Image (cartoon, rainbow, N blue to C red; front, side, top):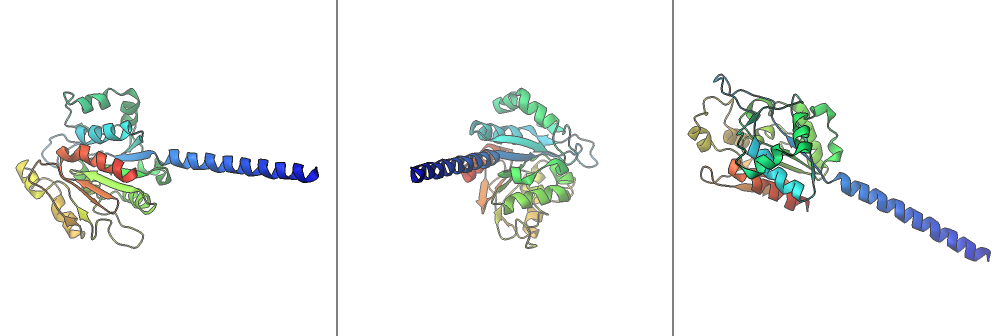
Length: 253
């Protein structure tokens, strides 16, 4: 009789332990459903006086792909708060869906500052483009440290168009630059020349990615091009934004 009671107790304890482990696993799984979007706080194209910011479609297109797949997205910018926006075109259905989504409009209008981010909560980090990214993302050491942490916890690092400007100074714990030795792309020298901003931006993104050891590749101007290498995903231009979102989804799945 005592043996039977003991066996039942052992069974109950084992079941409770298994249930606890399952809850912990589910909690971890849910936590890994979050993706961090980085957007610029910079609002002027150099000395031109022309406005800039994050490019709306480079947020909305991957946002649509990833939220449809069940991922939750948070936003961070160098200064926090409401970041400047460029490419404001609500005739684009994804732009309209994003801009009119109350939850996400509230989120991006109250973007986190880097020190508010907990890297362990994110399965991926994505740098949206827009010319503003060229001025404030490369030198932001806090954002670079967040990205390195996410990458080294087996997460995905992604960027599109001018967003890879945020990648050029990311160093891993071994001292190497994140892009060193990896295939990578971003807004090309040709495309910068075509928009007549080669002499305005602080550096040419294609040249700097190469200088950091990246194996830069690209397609003709304005053609979609996405490069994937060792959990590093980069897109060349605004036309590549949706495909970058799809590549992030595939890498996480």
